[in-house]
Length: 65
Image 1 (cartoon, rainbow, N blue to C red):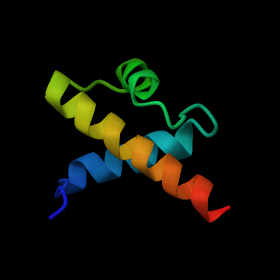
Image 2 (cartoon, rainbow, N blue to C red):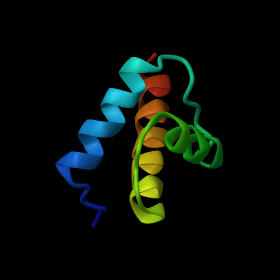
Image 3 (tube, rainbow, N blue to C red):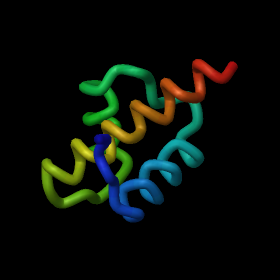
């Protein structure tokens, strides 16, 4: 069974990727810092969920190319 992410996490992650093209990488730790910089997420838990989903989307995008 996989993790189920809320629509808020998915929407914010997709918005961040679209507005900051080429900034996010497949490195989770770097993406955590970038999510803190580019968004106003209030909790560490939510930041990590968004950074994890961003990392997943970037990896999927790279494998499709």
